[in-house]
Amino acid sequence: MSTAARAVINDLPEQPDSGVADASDALMVAGDTVLSITAACAGIRIKMVREQGWSPEFAETFAQSLVRALVNRAMAPSQDLTSVLEGL
Image (cartoon, rainbow, N blue to C red):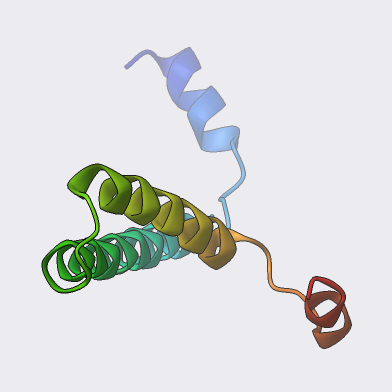
């Protein structure tokens, strides 16, 4: 490394904890949440076809819509009680 480059790098201020670890942890939790929701909805789909006699196509469409709604809800910013009640 050249002396000029080293001088520029050495002049850069130290970065405080950048939050990369926190972001990584949040992504891991989000991924686990999505997988859990998807697995639960797949189980519902299978049960509805086997036990309730739904057509496979309808059960698949229903399960996909359910996954989409639950993941969107899980990933949405938290709301206060008033906002939740207004949504009912």
